[in-house]
Length: 451
Ligand code: MV4
Image 1 (tube, rainbow, N blue to C red):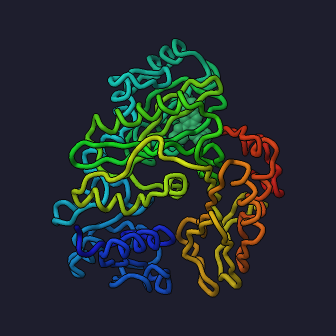
Image 2 (cartoon, rainbow, N blue to C red; image 1 turned 90 degrees about the vertical axis):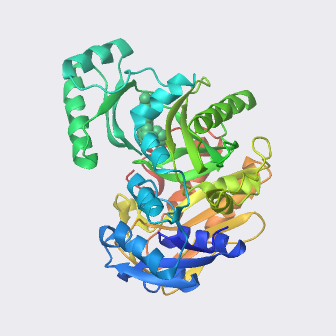
């Protein structure tokens, strides 16, 4: 097992990883930017190193500074958390080259799954359903238009280096296609340095359903059920739940098997997520694989009673997966992401000082947060300030718990999305489990929000 783990992250996930390390008897190293000097992750870690000024490209994204911090403090492993360098093959490689274990998959696995067209091809080889689309990438606009016509409109043009919604364009008919195609290519080139795109049929109202997987170095892979993450705004998830209200037991088993076969095929090590789109009629399609621990992992922890971060660390240290997969789930979990944002102002970030703070509690209520009364939410990073997760015996109990917990969550000094979340969970469509990726677009006026 590792002796000392450096956490290359900040905020709630840094605290989450520190907690797991302490339980495993592993020492911890925090890195922080000048904006995060007073942060709890710095206070709770055994060692801490300032790695630069506030902007993340000068601190949390600076690979040499992070590797140096690990070397100076004698860390033998680095946990990347989510975001920042979590899916950087280059960073994972830099760790390996410096003889520091990367808590996550191999650089090759990160690189492969970062290439969305390659991942799609892998799914096809395994007989995992993918959305009808181009065979690989398309360069020539005339070829592209012909392929789009064969697929049938509407189509979506996706950057192969993309994911999470960047570099995507929908074309509803032949007329607008060429412009959308060029826009997607230009946007992709600007954002990722690669203009490669592929084309799929566009599904109008799918659910976003993702499966948690965990693999080890001996080739074992288990799946730990799914999360429904359909409630999103501009590719930011706001609410996640497990199990997915839209999934039959048979379909769940099929999707779980598909997720495991993909992860097994590449010898996947650690925590990963296989994303699918699920249609109303039960058809499902592989979308992409995320090679990190995700923000919404606590939803799965609640229904499995497992600690995914501890398991991630154990498997990175070469231990076998210790979790039983599949049908070990109980109850229904829901997570609300609380952001320091103003829904009435187009979800504009609302940084500032927290003047009052009280977290909800009680059975089946979990709050993952790094904020405290008097702390400052800096403007430089994403605006997630807390995750509120509840576990009920069934979905109705989980909803009642979430409602109660949101009502008793006090955060003052910054504007938060709590009133907005409260309206969403009370919305009749959400309450009925009728969620899809267009949910928030259909309901623009929740809590005065401009979605
Ligand atoms: C799609 C789609 C419809 N049809 N692909 C968005 C992020 C990336 N993971 C894939 N995304 C989508 N791909 C086809 N062929 C709709 C989306 C999509 C979406 C997916 C999941 C959750 C929210 C979404 C919001 C808008 C679009």
